[in-house]
Length: 637
Image (cartoon, rainbow, N blue to C red):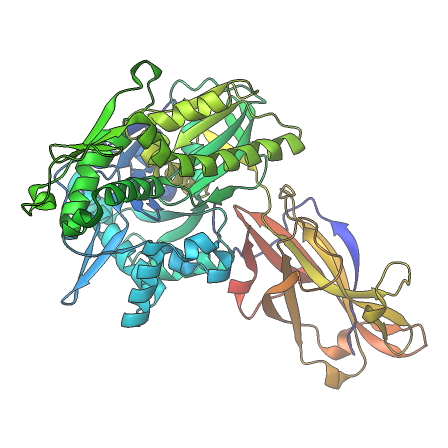
């Protein structure tokens, strides 16, 4: 019979341990459209300078890529991929879309206009129970799920197909800019961003997809390093360190990443301005209120107004109309103007919309009016299309502000990034909403900076990781907040006033309380910089009960206030088995309360913060035990 009890021991030193794969989390930076400066003199005796960091913003609706060598980063230079197959213009991102035909995989802008591509397949990695009902039933996700069912293609394979195409194109762009010989000499560090609210299983599937995509294939310069960064943190790293930002110690900013599908927010406080250092104030939050829902509202308004005529338009025509008449002409520039409240926003339709003799090009019977085959929307109509998404964003922003106040931090500014984050209407809306609050600034960069904030931030994150180079990044995240509680289950002496009767057990010598949990880290708490160790022991009655291994289970809880014992709110995160090198005969003897002689197996379980992950290690006699499956000794928060 084995029993566990625990005592606390904190360690201020970094114990020896194996590093298990992490999921990680300017003078000012120059952004290039794929063509950086020369790398002459970049390669020397210091192997840490032979690094190429590639940042991939794999988004729900659009994806972007940035890249930088150590020499580039030393020159404060980040390169962007802005040329894409199938696009004749420079674009900050490519659509996260796939289309399969005759064994060929098409992606992004290269998909024919009349095709019906797969969208939102990134969200197939998330279990249905972890999605909102609205998201589960959304048309793009239903369509993607149907494709998976019909083709028996796994979600991870879809993502691998897209990442493969994206990564191969990125290497093509870099090869054109620097040459094959330079590319071959560089060691890759690929940083892929993921939503902050994603659970660990989805991130692990992303890792598998990256490997299937060939990102981890062997290269002449050495093994590629793959890490993951939370999207809001990446956005914060790039946006807080932009030219002209006047940041002071104590400033608190909400980073609002308003993308196509989701809007993700996180709050940071400036802890030092020279050099710039920031810390998380609270957990990141997100919601389904991105730009595509504004697009759907516009499309619905057109469909409702045209009635059956809308059905005459082919998918290719609708795509073209949405791009030219809506996204470029109205959505991207729309800003309510009280001085011109009667301004009209006119949307034209092709002749096939009114192809029968009975069809009139005019309908003045109701709003919005149709004149000469064009819908004349009023300002109020367009505002209504934005309203649903803006309500969701307001809720998310207010929750972040309240969360900061609970931590005794007052939000001083909101920074907008992402595709919808470029909207002048969103800027004015938030400015009006918070004009009477402590939020003194709504910040929105111009050009492609908001759209590329996440992939640029992934570059910063890559160079924050050691040993990515000898350069000290100009911004540092000094602390993060745990998204979950992590602990170990144990047995302790029974106390009727403290423990439940159902946990009471007789161990042969005294009453014990089983199913108790010692939490190493609780949700919402700042992740400590120093390792934390707790001591445990097990009693072993005879040699037949000892097989030379130690089995440890790590438990996790999503509740803000985790219970002190195992119940339905607590689940097993992972298990790992370790080899005990001390033979049974060498274990110390121990006399129990009833006088029985047993062997006592004492050990420590340590939690070691590492990047944006936690490593767990087990020690006996000051030495770390070897796990038979090291992939289970690292968890992400």
